[in-house]
Image (cartoon, rainbow, N blue to C red; front, side, top):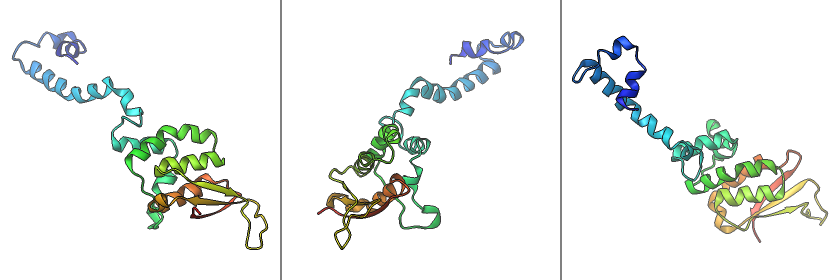
Length: 177
């Protein structure tokens, strides 16, 4: 904001006291310098809400706004070893796709999409009603087959499966054949 614009916000009696080199002019210059960072953010505000351009700490906050905290945070408060970690690029893509995933929540396609986006690995497979040891189909059960490249994201995969699967479905996670 320019010095003159700031001065116009003040009462006329105060404006009359603003002269070159005066204390009031110095105070207005300080105010102007303090407003510059906020004005820079406002001038480029759309960047903050685009997960691909937002600063990294803000992307985590966007993820929280979209309800992804249960996937990202894990049980850190309880000291669990299931706390999930995700790299920044994958998190940006996950935030960008979160609205679409929320619309189709509970489907095989969504769960695979979540897993592939969060781990940046393709090749996940979900087998519905896999057979038990006797060869009978197990209703309301799924097996998630994880590709070898996603092994390092095991905790993240577990968190996604526990959050994204329907409540009435049991699940097991194993390596892809």
